[in-house]
Each structure stands twice: as C-alpha cells, then as structure tokens.
Length: 215
Ligand code: BG6
Ligand code: MG
Image (cartoon, rainbow, N blue to C red; front, side, top):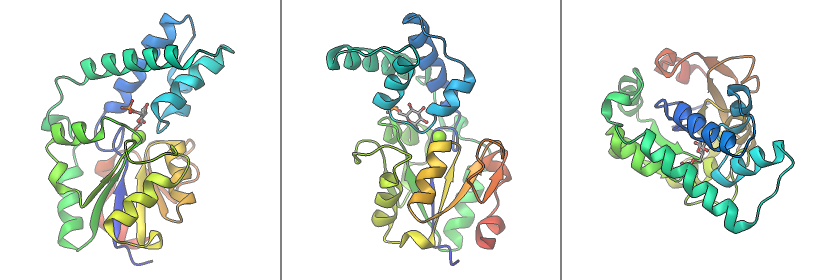
C-alpha cells in the first residue's frame, strides 16, 4: 500500500482526555445510581455523547426523555470541560510532534477524525491545530463510530482515497470505523482489546514513520 495520509483519533491517541471522559461519565453514572467501571468505559471509547449516555442508561434498563438526556449530556460536558480546563501543549503525548514532523517531511498528509464535539478546542489547547491538513469531528457527521463516516469525511477533506489512508485509534469502535472505511487500522493500547487492528502499539510514542511506511 502507498500511504498518502494518516488520520488520527484524538482522545486517548494524541492526549490523555480519554481518562477525563471516563471520570466525567463515571461521576454521572454514579449520580444516577448506575455502576460504571474502566471496563465499561472501554465500550464507550470513541462513542459519541448521546450514544454513551444511552449505553449507561441501558445498563440499568432506563430510558429518559429527550429533555432529560439533553440536560444530563450538558452536565457531563460541563464536568469534562472543568477537568480539561488546565490543558496546554504540555498535555500532548510524547512522540506526537516528531511523528507529525516525519510524516510532513515525507509528504504524508495528517488528518483528525474525532467523535468529540470538543475536538477543535482540544487541538487548539494542545497547540497542534495548524498541523492538521483536515479536521473531521462530531460536529460534521451524523453517524458515530463504529460507522466509518468521520474517517471517510477526513479522507475526502484530505483529498486522499481511503485505500491510501491509515487510521490510528485507541478504541474498539474506532478500529471498526477505520476498517469499515476501507483503511488500514493501527491501534494504540492493548492488542487483546484492539484485536481488529493490523498492528497495535502501547503508546503513540512507540509508533514510528517506518511502521507507517511498512504497511
Ligand atoms: C470520543 C471519546 O472521542 O468523544 C468519548 O472517545 C467521548 O469518550 C466522545 O464520549 C464524545 O465527546 P464529546 O466531547 O463530544 O462529549
Ligand atoms: Mg479515542
């Protein structure tokens, strides 16, 4: 395969926001009297805000009105925003800057495909917004991961056919989305969790340009 673009997920791949999403969802679940563990959260990585809330409610066989859902989503997001209020370029994972620089030097485009409505703000805070050739996020798509829409939108925005794109994800739903988009999936995390990825690395720092070019 000739790699022409690498499309990155944001939360949990470029920075540790995955943990803040977990903390905020857990606080909300506990408030509703619903248990919520790190293992539960694994299912919610990459899943959009409404999908995540409904998954938690379904755990307790509960359903709420659209108004109640909207109020709870707002509350979770408020908590999440408080948790990331201090975020700065220091929160970018080690290894991202050198990888981006190498990709650029080799003429490989850099895209973002995030399920988060806060993605633009987070990449701005991390100081990397200008390094993306195209950003696709939850504000621009209808269907959430595992649907391929956000990755396909990123590829389109980059002007690269999906078969020349690699997607990088820390979430089960995200790897499914990349595969469904007809791209090659690289996982960041545990190989036994991300078993549909072609290769899995423990952190983004372990992913090198040579690994990308080898695919
Ligand atoms: C994904 C995260 O990137 O974005 C999920 O993996 C999160 O944990 C989802 O729930 C939606 O984020 P937001 O910022 O739109 O609530
Ligand atoms: Mg993620």
